[in-house]
Image 1 (cartoon, rainbow, N blue to C red):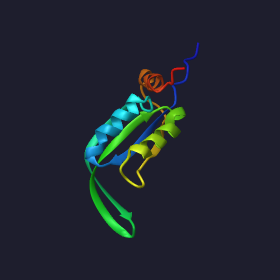
Image 2: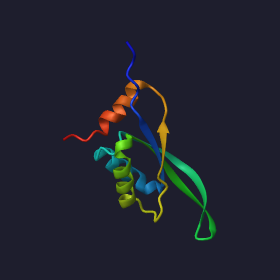
Image 3: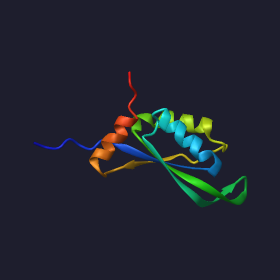
Image 4: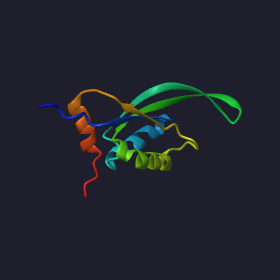
Length: 112
């Protein structure tokens, strides 16, 4: 008897100002767009914006979700995010603890 494959999950990176991190994380989890959002405070971002090199202290959100919820997650994050062009980058989780991956899928399931 073979094991069922692990569910697919995504890790979405989103940098934001520290004062908006909690509201973003809470909304995404509350709305079942994310199973969990981990906040890494005090990351320093260097980037080019409007022809200038900028540096800012930010918070990096690590958002765990199911691929079926990505489009809605991105749309909602853009609505809530204070930046004109927020960082929203999704990468596929290609392995991990199977019960955790099932939990991510369960927590982001839309109840009909």
